[in-house]
Length: 289
Image (cartoon, rainbow, N blue to C red; front, side, top):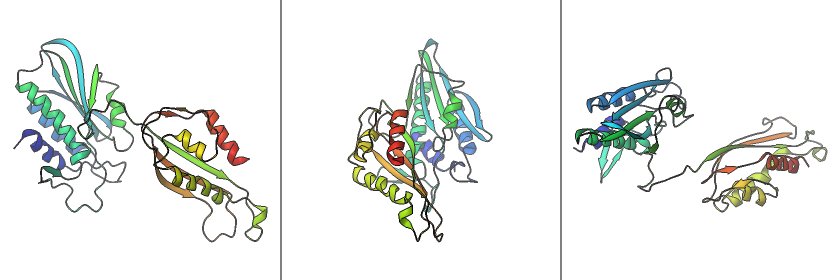
């Protein structure tokens, strides 16, 4: 069997669900040990670094015969949960693909970068420079592994081996958490005209998102469609993706018009976007007006 595929199946077989996403989950310690053993067997210098107790990054280094520029391959070793999966840690090869939790995101990339180092090592090593294989924890939650990594390791260039349909991606699409709160005025349910329903105000926002999603490229355009002026610095990408996270208002059964409505959105923008304070102030003024 191809050595990279063999390693991939070994990695899939190790539970490394992120405990920050699933309380009580295994975490990355076991898969880190598997990776460290594999890289040591290839002749790499291997170091571990705890990003948190029991959550180690694993970094392998292949030194060239003389000094030179360095390249880092980087990938994460944690996965999301396995809800509704029947056999998540039993890799299955079918029709040229391998199935199992983490097979794509991203134990395949981790196996590929480790095996690339093996091929170089077994082919005489590097003539010059240094190859760094960085396997980090917690990408699926807060990226504490990457934060820890950069405190000790540097490279002249890096390749993150996340799946990109075999197309080289040279930039991160970026994301932002946006919390929108509508402020109304509380009133007794028998006297609705004395109040201002915050949930109904939020309805304007939700309706605007329904209309704009998939058609609006930037948050600035979205705000414009909702009727809010802004001075955002925007670089257009593809369509804006918006995921509705949660909403809150008064508890059901209380005979009181809601005075506060709040939504939290996970907005993935396909390029970098900076929303200036001026834009936020205008948005607040629009709702408060």
